[in-house]
Image (cartoon, rainbow, N blue to C red; front, top):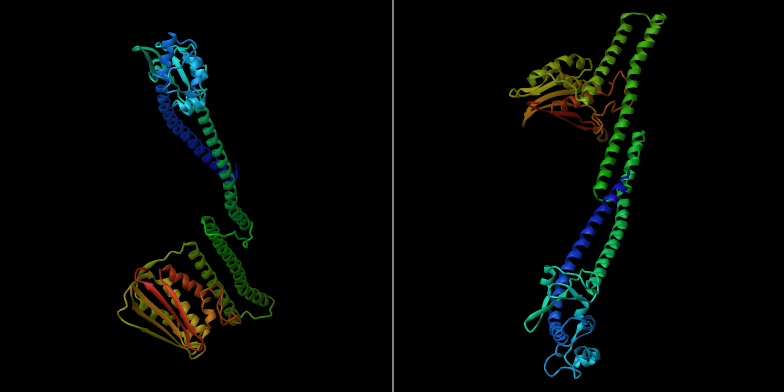
Length: 483
């Protein structure tokens, strides 16, 4: 009972049991009611045919003695004209006349088929209800109730009631009609049992078909729980179970990608941290051993490595805060034109060292946006710094700003070497560099653009990139007014 298949089978069995019980009971009630109504009406007609014969019998004998033999013979023949004028038996003995009558003679006399009688049980009583004759011989001598007598047909002789003829209901024992009805009910019962067994077998097969993908899903889930991210569930079909399996497989694929990215991220972090730490450690050891002088040049090199290491750690911290949804933005009113000028002034000297030109293009009617000034400064600084770092001397870097529907657009454009189309999709990936040969002297950690994308999206904005080889690269940022 712990498996879903067992529970479904038990529930299905109970449903079949209740349904069959309802069908059998309803069929029994409807059939019994209608059959009893039919037999009662037919028996009433039968009693009307018998009453003249029984009245004649009582008139001839003065009592009901020996009437049982007459009722038993009535089960075969009912002469509807035997007692009419001109049809009396020559012997004058009605019972003897009855004994000598055969089927062919009865038909010639207009005798009716007694088939209807075979569905009835005939009971003859005294006027007070004492049973004097019963075709089933069960009630002879017993006293019937007034309700039972009301269902019978009075037999009169010279205007006086001498007895009552009753056609018993079909559900009483001993009646042929009751036997037929019982056989019918048994047939319905066995048919219901057979149909229930067939339905139960088909249902168990169907449930097994349903359980197969669920078991596959369970096995795949257990595999993923143990670390096997390659496990997938069987998703054949178009039903709800298949849809669940497909959703599970999509989730498993996403988890596999996340796990791969996590491992790659840890490996990249270890590599990025090891490089500056190795430089710092080896240079300090050389200084302590007297191999390198502790002069300003060496200390400046070590200082730059610590700055690079600190920047890497800060970028990792920013990304972790964004991933955890814990990055707090200190929003305020920001004039985009002023922000652009500040970034340009901060990086102008760095651009001049590489003989590059920084330009700004913006209109004076740019609306004020509600954003985190420090984080937007970090975004623009990373983009401009990347353009300066990865472009050759003589390149022009332009920072533009303009009003856009619902917000502001900021563009950072250079006329440098550009990027190939296959690299554009990975520009914002963490620890990715367009040129694998770039070292720490010419390239960063590969986190700058990833941080830019996360900070822009944290403001409710969008960043896109467009680049062509030999024509430069353009980053476009859209920021809503109330990001």
